[in-house]
Image (cartoon, helix red, strand yellow):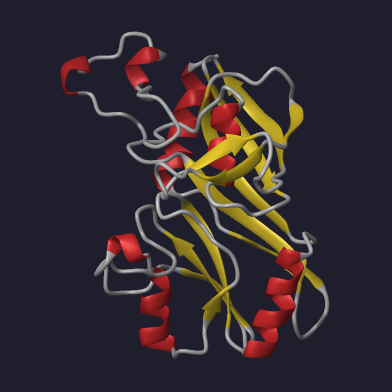
Length: 240
């Protein structure tokens, strides 16, 4: 990729992008030479642009950046003080017991695999994810998750440790595939069938925060990308 992803919002202080799945947000020493969003932005918009939060490379959706040092300090401070409403939408394998619940497993980097996180009882970092069921579709569930804290892979490992891994998570999930033939009666073409979603079913949906100049509360949202929207449409239509 040599061009920037779609711009969702822009003014003199902020710029927000709709990142595709598979694109790193910032440089990763373990992925030398791989294109990252921040590199593209700074190449085309200047070195003063900076991201204020992290989104996994495998996830899609909203990446919020600032254009000035003052805006960066102001907005990133809100993330650090946990006053930002940072929302993800996700399809998980399984069905949570409750419609609204919290996950607060303590997390730390896995010493055996530095690119992974693990759940620990002590000597880790506190983490909190608030979850709300949007819809249940048999053995799949559409969730909305709010990151109260912002640990690496937080949503993915919290949901996996809760028994409902994110669909298509190669690190914390299982090999379950979302196939239309599973729930559409009379489906033809099973031999050549491909999953409805072939990547991590995790989308950074919206961020609500205080604008660095107007000091007014605002929300920026990234609509579901086509593959996730289509999968949820078919689940809603055929899985009842």
